Image (cartoon, rainbow, N blue to C red; front, side, top):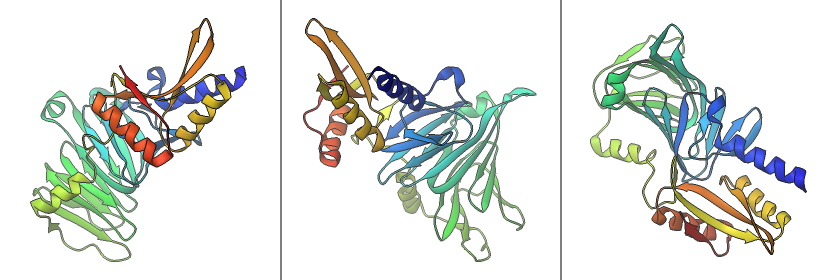
Length: 292
């Protein structure tokens, strides 16, 4: 039993991340379920985790993920996404230059850089879709890799886009679109309307009231209190397989030890209650409680 408890604790630590072995990418927010695969081990993705090179993030229907790069830029992922942090770190020869290679295997993403992040450091970021590559120096763009096409919408700034052996295309006009239909030549740049851009942006935003976790969130959702360790581990395993980063907290008293199964890092009571309501419906969880 004790060894099984240690295994469970080790898996939880691997999923939430270890700052001492971290890459320069913070998981700032997660609308679960979502997973990270590292070294062949797939675990639920938790807010506050630090990603390592080659980590692959997978999201489910309705899921969203917010990542914060080391230069302050943000990457937002939509549902049914597969995303790999191939590299992300300051350049060895120039610590003010942040370099990253980000791979969008499937799904929607948004890369955005705040004014403060732009002023604070230089960046050399490459975003790789299956057949399209975008080189970024500091900008705001949205894109998606679908089964029948890949496309990128420039919101602000400028980027250089290349597809396979085709000539590189410079994009500098806001709302311009690079569209790459599968098995067809790439047409000239198009444009997108503001209403359509709003719809696209909603695909990668974490909406309030959906039970999302945030790095540094102080609220906890308790999903069960057990007197038997095996029962607690069963609940823990069920939640984690489903993509929810549950943890177990043992509590000792004069009458023995109880085990609380919880999800941490919820930013408010309202978000904790929303997650509890959702888990009752999705996983038939019983009574829940929230606390700080």
